[in-house]
Structure formats: structure tokens, C-alpha cells
Amino acid sequence: MKHLLTAWGLTLLILATPQAVAASGTFGKGALGCTSEELFDEFSAAWARRDDEHVGALLDRGGGCHLLAGRRYLVVHRGRSRSKVRVYLTDRSMLYWTASENIADAR
Image 1 (cartoon, helix red, strand yellow):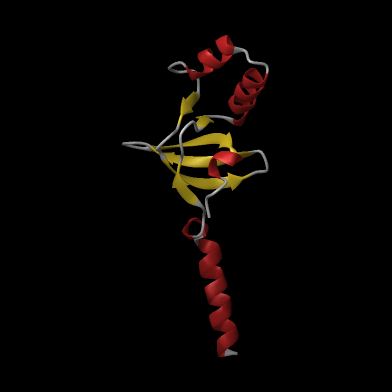
Image 2 (cartoon, one colour):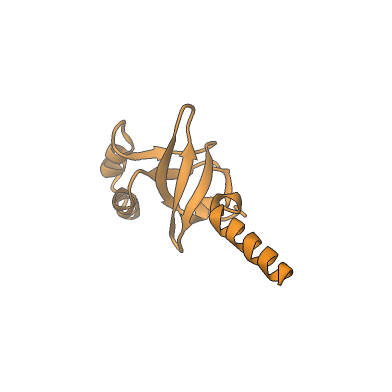
């Protein structure tokens, strides 16, 4: 019975601290993220149709999409094609959506 309670307590501890086992890393060259899933979809569609003007507008200051190369991140939600990550900036952190391939090597 004591072993069962110990195992149950350990399981609760693991479940209570999901970030302790979450994937994290540093973005490589060319990584990009957007501040919402909708903006990420919009950026991806513009990129696919080679709409350079729209891509540029989304990357401009205040456009909602940013280059993330060299920034540290923590995976919040991993999807098949896109993932939600917490990106650590100099003085704060922000949530971004990025292509899952940008975090493919994270464990």
C-alpha cells in the first residue's frame, strides 16, 4: 500500500509540473513566428503564393510576425504542421505560433 501511495504521489507531481518535461531549445536561422494562429495561417498562405508585398507587411513593425532566430523557446503545444511556443525576449516572454519543423529537433 505504501508503494502505491508513493507511486500515486509521484504521478501527481509529474502531472502538476508539465513544463519540467516540456521541449525547449533555441530557434535556428530563418525561424519565424506570429503572435496568433490566424496570422501564422495568413503568413503561410502569402508565402506559398509568393506574395512578397503581403509577407513584407506582416513582417513590418507591428505586423504580428517576427524572425525568431537565436531566441530561446518552450513548446506549449506541438502540432503536426504548426506549434505554439513561449519565446523568451530580453525583458519578457511572448506566445508565438511557428512551423513545427522549426522545433523538430527539440526533445
